[in-house]
Length: 89
Image (cartoon, rainbow, N blue to C red):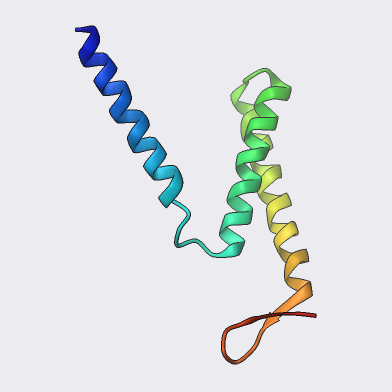
């Protein structure tokens, strides 16, 4: 019985690792920055609030907003030429 639960845990961790590494492959820069901000904000909110769901959600919302603002600031410094190459100002 213990071996079966060990296999399930191993399979679950393998699937979770696969999702982490492939989940963001087709995302735009904006989506990645907002998602990263939401993740960091959620963890920070959970640490500050002691794991309360409201604090975690508030941190995620604030982090997503910060990621969006960071993305807008980064995009001020480059543009794309007609060939799709990123050109820094």
